[in-house]
Each structure stands twice: as structure tokens, then as C-alpha cells.
Length: 166
Image (cartoon, rainbow, N blue to C red; front, side):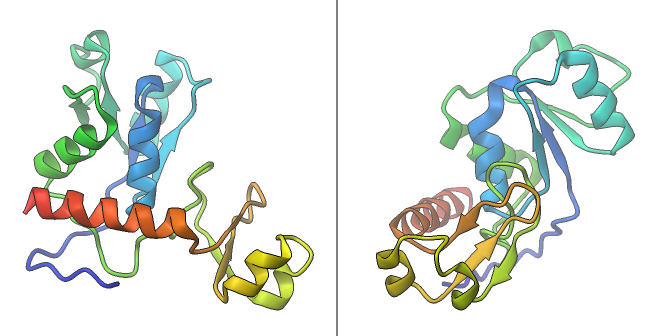
């Protein structure tokens, strides 16, 4: 399915999410946005990376929100990850971009590489190989992805989120 929207959005915006926003980071990766997240990053490392890499810092921490040395920061008010995604999209005017969905690894943020069916033989269960023709591979963490039922479910959720934003 292809999204068509009147507003054009750049995927150049990069994010870094604090430890409380792991699910939001995954949702942004689903949309194709470069979103760093690690539950191991402490507050100072998070801030250093945000500044050095020119990333929008997404946080729920009021202490970080008050820091004056961070130029690009968005304080997330919502608790629910789907509402957090809506909040980010509304406040930053983000929209799903055709061709960008499911292009990043949900675990490590790396850009996925298409992989032919013959190259995944023996790496996925036989029923998966028989049911799908399209596969993606993460060159960093070696995860394999295919458009299974979870893919359709996430696609539908993303489309619903986009409708709520428009």
C-alpha cells in the first residue's frame, strides 16, 4: 500500500529517544525515521549524542527538558506509545512517506537491505519461505524481516495513526 499526502515530508530529521521511549523509537523506525535508542545510554551520553549528531532529543524527563544546552528537544507528554507517536507527528508535522515504511531495523535502527528468497533458504522456517517472496536483512544485527501478519498489522496501525493526524 502506498500513502499519498498533500504535504511532503523529509526523512532527514533524526531522533534520539530516552530510556522511557523505546516503543516510540520503534514506531518512528517503522515510519523510516533514523531513531537512536538504547536502554543502556545514561542521561549525559544521550545529550552528547543528540548534540554531536544533530538529533532531535525525545524525552519524558522533566530534568532534561529544562536543560538550556540542548537546542532540539521535544518533551513527550503522553504515556501511551501510540499517543506518543501521534504527539510527535502532530507537533513536528511528520507524515508517513511512501517507500520509507519498514526500511529500518526495528532493533538497531540500521537501514535494511533487500535479500532474495534463495539467500534466506535455511535461515527461515520452510513455511515462511513458501509463504513469502520478499525479505529484508539487517547488515548490523543479522535479523531477517518479511511481510508477515505483524507487518500488515503494523501497516494498518500506521495508516490509522496517519488518518488521526490529518
